[in-house]
Length: 151
Image 1: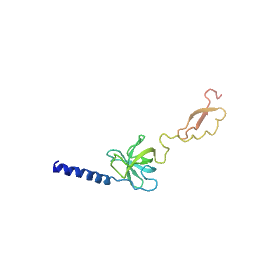
Image 2: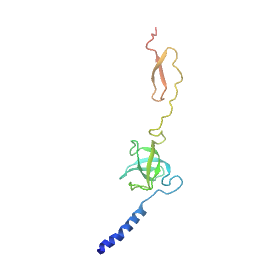
Image 3: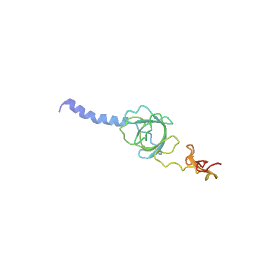
Image 4: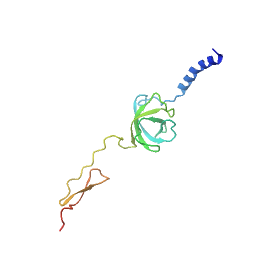
């Protein structure tokens, strides 16, 4: 075996150990240990080489994996997910496997929408439902009955 091949065989494990030591992980603490579900609020930002980059409200950066439900760079979002022990994303303080993502302070995408506000009651005499409002889902607009003459 040549001398340079022996050096290479010795150097490969050292390089692997150094690379592993350089892999940044999010600080371990209650609720953010790898494998635990965690909630984050922040903004999707540009700059992710392999995965979407996310910056929390306190300035920490994580990469995201999973279904981002069409959200894109610039969106303010709330995320629930699991901090991963290992990732191919290679950026930030760790990688979050997204389980739910919502606009900040909104209902989760795919979650059941809140129940509509009920109509204040049936339409007054001589009026019929003619539509609904966009601002109050489920609220009925009443109007004159087109089948009755007003004479």
